[in-house]
Amino acid sequence: MNSFQRYITSFWSGLGSLLVGMKTTLKIFFRKKTTECYPENRATLVISDRYRGELVMPHDAENHHKCVACGLCEMNCPNGTIRIESEFVEDENGRKTKILRAYHYDLGSCIFCQLCVKGCPHGAIEFRNTFEHAVFTRSKLVKQLNHPGSSVVKKQ
Image (cartoon, rainbow, N blue to C red; front, side, top):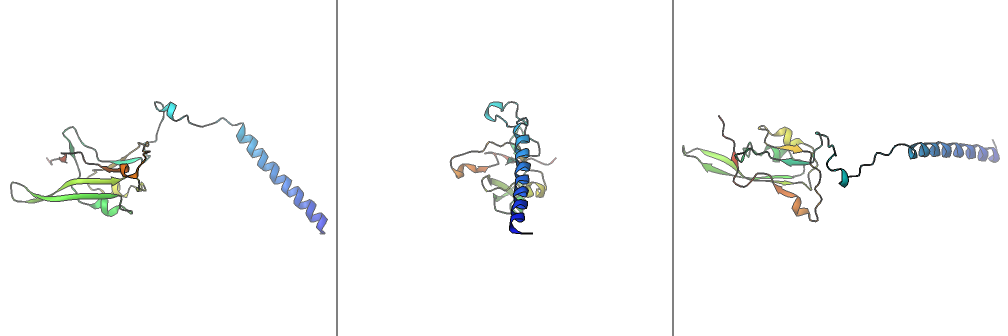
């Protein structure tokens, strides 16, 4: 095969691939658009229940949570997103009990792997599907999950 034949062959090959690309482009151009008009459709927006948007610690009506400050979620976190502050207090029987002082969670460095939720033996934390977390400073993404004055649910 001489150089002229190779040139003609590669020309037709290139033209064929160009036409395949143009066919794909035109097919997608005339397809119905699926763009969401996000700020306008907040009321009708459907977020999947499986979406991991932010870690929360549910509290009941009496401001009780299930966290016993065992630290398993902090140990399971691969990048140190969770930091637990706890202390030992003595009850009326003289026994020392560990209580949670502060549960800090850095949303900005979380990789949403859910190892903390799966590792929690008491089901004290869970992911919610909230997604609006835009802030101007990263320090606002560090949250304290336990509410002020909250305590552990008493076992019955």
